[in-house]
Length: 399
Length: 212
Image (cartoon, rainbow over all chains, first blue to last red; front, side):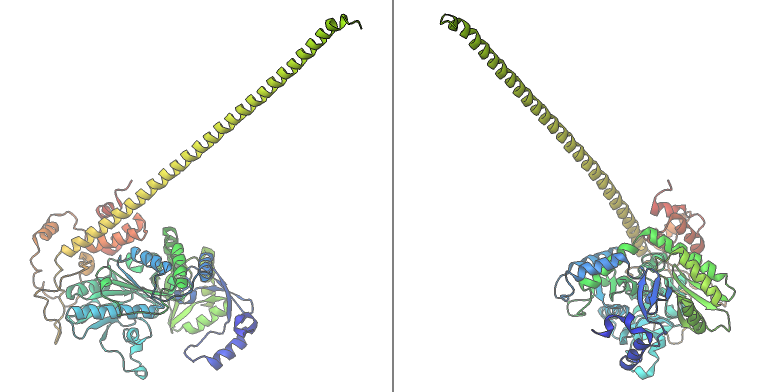
């Protein structure tokens, strides 16, 4: 029997040995070997229980192993796993209708991740610009944005695009200071293909974009005929208390990209276009072997069944407000930011967030440390109020 | 027994036997008839009950189908109304002249050169600079800059005549929040805090219908 069939048998040390021997060194992992999850809870190989306020980087938004998702995956796995995009498959078609009708009303391109969804959006933007007669189209983003790690998305991710060891980068990308409406207006011109931004920056530590900057982006795009693309990979699928974050803003984008929580743990991404951008790509322009395959699409349908529920979304808004208020009452917390259950904390000067994160993990709370002075909380949307209380208590103790 | 007696005595016996047989047959027939009547009555009863049950179930199904149809129609209607309002809001925005370019500081070699002539047709011009938000905190008193481009008649009328020119951005925000399931109170709060709109009733009523 392959050892990998039951990681619980392996244990942390054996898993770490295999990891270090056979995996490329692209991650620094925390010293935990998770083997089981249910709702907002995780258990490691030694049977220790953890409260998960990271949700696998905002993926497990409906909680770990949600019964509806498990049932959908099981049922679909017994029926059909893959046939490629050369044929029609019903889960994908149904999911596309649902995504379109719940947002911009146009068409959907499926991908396997947020990065790929953004690649599709970049491709649409460039082709759209060429149709306008733009020879060298440019994409404008904010400093601190994170759009992915493949070369197109990487080039739109200013902090990482400066890594010369990975160069040369794709040309045609420009960054302006975060939330600077004037700088954005100035950067958008006739050669701009799109403004590609996150409504709330995730990887940078949860930085909500001001309405002024969003409005400036929309207005600037309208003036030159560029597309406004909102990267909702992290903010979408209910994370901020509405199905899509833009629905709580005075702006309607031309494209949104989604992934992470959409698959409930299975890899899927989607580039969702409004009516105009929907007609840009033609046969042969773009494609993906696995994208929108029945298994991931069935899981995503089940996820939307759970999340696209006004009562759940209201609960996300209420719990988020409660969580932020309680965290703001902790003296060592200098600032809280975010919307819904996407929350960033800046710790008081002198407090090492990495040490706090490690301490919280030892105490049984999983959080993310996106910056030396910041914690990021992304609990499952189905988290119980008592679990929120418990998490606040643990953070208070750790600080 | 004498031979003369036999006929005399045999007749009554025969007749009484025949009578008894006849009575027995008659009784049996009556009993059979009663059984048949009973059976028929019972069958009629069963039929009536089955008919009544069938009628009841049909009526029940019809009622629930009616309820379902009503609910579906109501939902479809609500969605249609929301879509209409969203479209109207977007169209209204699309028809509106883009607001004047903001007073950007002098740009040495800004590539933007042609805001004046024939800007590309705005597609999803979903926003206009809302009054309170758009006032940029630009520092050193730039004189009231070039007057905004002459407003189109319809727009000028709207700006001049309306009691509360609810900014399109505020309407779009309210519409999107409504579509995404936010409550009237939540939307109202956002309109007040985000746009400084004190009297939110007009926007809310237009999108959600009058408060009942």
